[in-house]
Length: 163
Image (cartoon, rainbow, N blue to C red; front, side, top):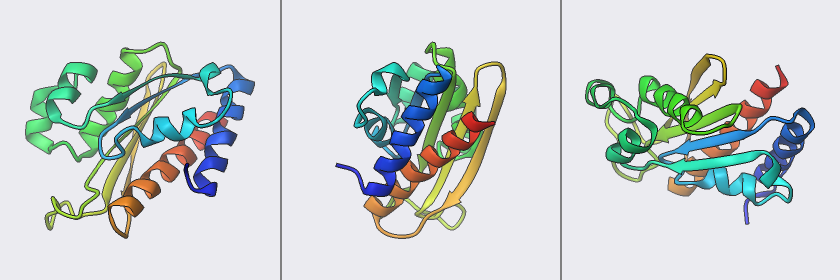
């Protein structure tokens, strides 16, 4: 279902987490569940994938992940502050060890000069307090932007869990 590079990354991540007995949770906006989908495509994912949240709208972000409305109003849904809050919220509402979150503008519309199409923030959180984000600028159409976001999220999770 997914491109071979994404499939291989997801397989490595599932194997990596299983060997370390760690678990994952996802919180997705622009990727609409594709990160969770890539992980659960892999046999054995049930050992490491705790749950996933698809919070496409702002109301879902506040209801499901407890992202503060003030953050959304001040910075917008596509921001470092919100993606970090999404990752923290996913951890808080799960038993997972690690969280990944994604929010961005996949296009074709919705972009501005300040936040163009292709801008994606990926947030990562580790139980115990570590939270950070990456800003990505992807090129291509909607499908390409979303696929690149999934790939980058899996790579970042692998790096985080390796540390």
